[in-house]
Every structure is written in C-alpha cells, then in structure tokens.
Image (cartoon, rainbow, N blue to C red; front, side, top):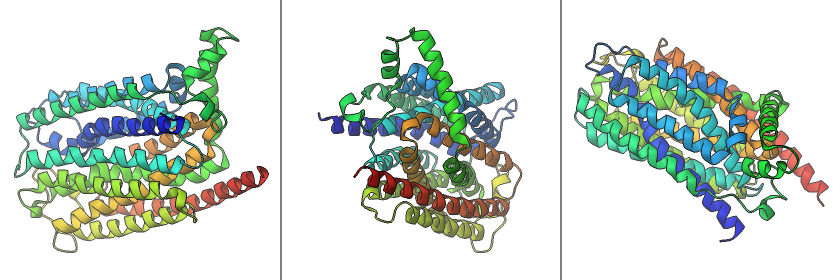
Length: 453
C-alpha cells in the first residue's frame, strides 16, 4: 500500500471506530431522558439533562490536560481507554443507580476530552493541506452513520410503545454496550503514517515517534513530562490567539446546537401527545433523519472541499440558513413546554397543527446544518494549526463542550422558544466571526503559496 493509501485507510478506520462507539453513545443520549422518565424505581432521581451538563462541564475542564495525556500514551491507547469509559456509562443504564449515573457522567467527561483530542491528532497527521477537507468529510460522514443505525433500532424496538419497560431498557442498553466495545478495539488497526511522506508536510508526528527520538537525548521519563507540559502550554497559548478567538463563537454555537439536536429535540418529539401512541418511537426516527442530514452534508461538503473555489464561507452560510429554517418550523410545530413535559407528555399545541412530517424535516435540516459547521471547523482548524493539532483540537472541544454543558443546564428550565432564540442569536454571530477567520486563513495560504514560488 502506498503511503497516501495507508493514511487514507487510517482515516476510514478512525471513522468506523467512532461510528460504532457513537452508534451506542449518541443513541443513549437521544433516549436517556425519555428512559429515565419511565423508570419503575422510586430510588432513582437522576436527570438526563443534568447528566449531560456534567459530562460536557467536565469535558471542557479536561481539555486542558487532554493534550498531555495524548502526548504521553499516544492517540491509539488514548482512544481505546476513553472508549472503555464510554462503554461503562452506557452499561450503567442496565441497572441504574443515581450515584453510578452521575459518577459515570464525570468519567465520560474526562474520556471525551482525551478521545476527541486524539481524534484531531490522528486526523491532522494523516492529512495534508490538499486533502484535509476531504478527510474531514470522510470522517464526519462515517461518524454520523451512528445516528442512523442506533436510532433505526430504537424506532423498530419501541414502535407502538407508550411506556418503556425495564426489559425494553435492558435489552437496548446491553446491545449498545457491545456495539461500543467493538468500536474501541477498531482503533488498534490504525497504523503510523510513513515518516518520509509526512515529515515534509506535517511537523507534528505521533507522540510515540517523538518519544522514541527524544530518548536518545534525555531519559524517557523526563522527556514525557516535558512533552506533556509543552502540550499544555501550547493549548493555553492557542486559546488566546486572534484566529481561535474569532472561531470561538462559531465553535460555541456548535456546542449549543449539539445539545439541542442530540438531547432536547428528541425529548420534545416524544412528549407531543398529539403525535399519537408512536410518539416515543418517533425519537428514533428523528435521530435517523438527523443522521441522514449529517451524512449528506459530511459527504458532499467534505468531498467537494478541494474543488470549492470560494472557500469555506458558502458552506457555513448554507448551514446557518438551514438551521434558521429548522428553528422557525420547530417554533411553529412543537409546543413550548415540550422540553419540560412529564412522562405523560404535553397536550398543548404550538402555532400550527402538529405534523410528524414537519418534525422529521426539521430533524434532517438540523443534521445538515450541523455538518456544514463541523466539517468546515475541522477543516479550518486542521489547516491553521497543523503543527499544533492536538492542542488546537483540545481548545476546539473545550469551547464546544463548555457551551454544550451550559445548554444542557438551561434545558432543565427554559421553554422551547427561549432555547430557539438563544440558538438564532449565537448562530448568527458565530457565522459572522467565522467569515472573518476564513478570510484570514485564505490570506495566509495565498501568502505561503507566493513565498514558495
């Protein structure tokens, strides 16, 4: 296999590993609030929204140390051990207790920071300036197949169920735990890229390689410590650069809308009694349509990135318009108290007669818009911070996760129309600042091309 072929296969394996893991985890996040409302145990007092707020809050703080962890143990082991903690969180729902629920949430928050920092590292070292957009799109499309498969299972398993029994819950979460573990072991198939093919384009190599070369100069232990400290310092410095500050609003917006489509919107659909007895199974169908939007966007915008003469801005603008249309239709179609409704649901009606077709169209638009933002953010960060990819992606996930934690927190209290208003305002401001950052990235690329003549 050629060096380029090996690096492309690494991206595909990375995508499949994440697809299996997040088939389990995203399905879990999509249904957990509904499942918790159906618990027969009076001793359990957990909240799915609170759990997700804990996960993303710890996630944001852990991003400060994640680059150091990835540097010390390498991206492969980082992703494997993080995946085991994800699997443990999912398995907790088989026999849930309040203390184990929230404890597992803390561990998943730490694991998520390490996992996504390692993912960004592997993506960057297996890409070049010319194919970073393509590779981001391939990874994103494979990742979002997770929404399709997991939610299809939920739709079929829960079709016609008004109440989720203990047996229903245990069957689902045992299956999801096994699927997650399969993804963990796939990471061991990723191979180190050829040094001769990557050295001229990527100054940052795998941590394993750097530790081996540095051991000839100093002891391995002192080398690892210095690399860990260096990664932490780089992350702090990157956080306050002009480019990252500009991107922070658009990154923050992806955290807010991640919360909305992955946790809040499915709960809203399941709470609409006017959708009939199939309302609970529609949560799975909604997740499928979100996944279809994500796959379409990731595949099209990622694969066509290198052919796009107009840069990343048109894709982000399309994502913004797509989301605004979705938010408006959701405002008209879903009752305002749906995010906070009890297990019995809500009988209220919004501004039009509730329509399942409109609800599923909005799911598709949410996924399509999210893929527009995320593929372009992955692309621009991978391009601008190629020499410091692990710290840069750690900062990206720090901002995204702290905003997701904030959104899950206020989802416990705010009615639907207030949540939509926040999304509209932050989405508009984030897009404007992304346009400026993209202009700066394009200017620096043209200057580097000129200097190389």
